[in-house]
Image (tube, rainbow, N blue to C red; front, top):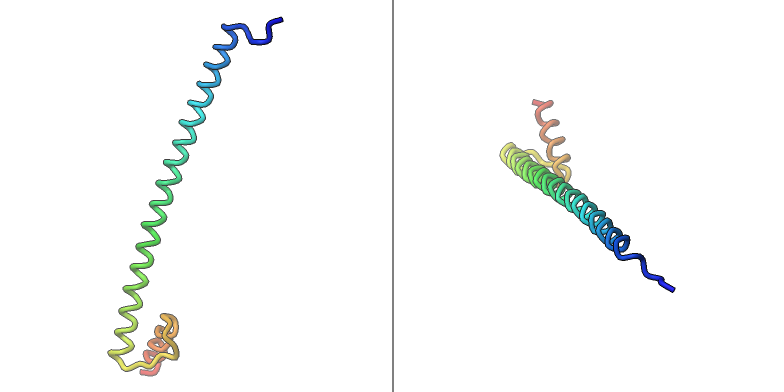
Length: 90
């Protein structure tokens, strides 16, 4: 009794499996490259936002100190609110 597939069918199956795996790995690689590119763009955007916020905090702190405006807290929001109150008064 012969349990192994016939040689031509076996090699066709191996070839088709190879083709499927090759196509799948190529698609997977493309998706990984795309995801990596997206992650890098998001990181650049986040870095820019952090840099902008740091610059804003420095300017607001400097303005509060220069104008002698006491803030009720050290947060950016409290400093901006203190500056706004000062501007409304005078």
